[in-house]
Amino acid sequence: MAGKVQTISEIRRCSLDLLKEGWPAEEAAALASAIISEYTGMGRAAQMAFGERVPGADAAARIENAVARAVAGEPLQYILGYTGFCGHRIEVAPGVLIPRPETEEMTIMITSENNGFTGTVTDLCTGSGCIAIAIALAFPSAAVTATDLSGTALEMARRNICINGAAVNLIRADILNDDPSLVPLSNIMVSNPPYVTMHEKEAMHGNVLDHEPHEALFVPDDNPLLYYRAIAAVAETRLLPGGTLWLEVNENFAEETAALLSPGSYRKVRVIRDIRGKERFIKAEKNG
Image (cartoon, rainbow, N blue to C red; front, side, top):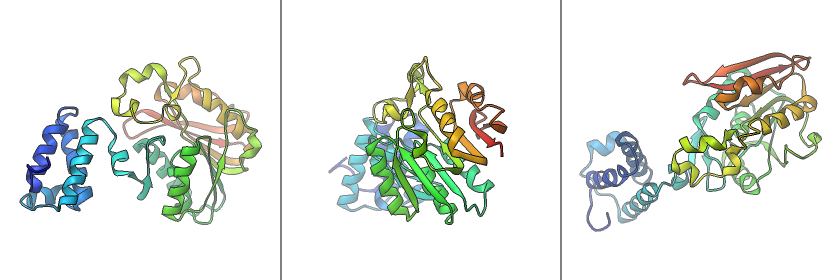
């Protein structure tokens, strides 16, 4: 694009031509609009209405670079360096899972159902810290802890906590192997652990497979509930009586995951569908 295009309309047209090589037309248009907006401050409507405007050389170069990265398959969130989550800016980078809309949906359920909450919350497998941060900001009087094993994820979570001014205590913990007592006693426990089976890779877009951390996504085909068994064991001793466990789950194993939570420990175990109708969440209330 450099040296050949000058106006917003020309940049947009060239960007679309390039992006359409790897993306459906509608997604390519959304990507082009988002990239141009990021570096010019012009939303999609403004791009269409004021297409004759000429961005500065620096903005044009940044757009060209971002489009090239998108054409190569890099996720937009990594290109921009951040994503939105529950109205907050969450920075992301390679090595840290990009927050999904489903995770945001579950977090909104938690905050909307617990107005004025002042207890203790633990987010297991926090990744970027998005869940813990959103909960901490929604419940400023709560004590919020987030755990992860990945040093890369913990560093990004720490950065996001600072950026958003959230009060979150970070703990490095391996829920598969460490003593559950590392986790604080909690009134609410939440987790979005790895849950995609290896054979499901075939249906995934290359920009996920080639760029996002596999250790944060995948579980063995012969042990798809690996993390949920560990979480259930942690919750058995660290979730307080009367407390609530929230899980984001693989839609293909929702009922099997719910079955891990025994009636002897939980009085209510619900499988909840997401906005697309998929069995995506589990809410369980501890006996107390």
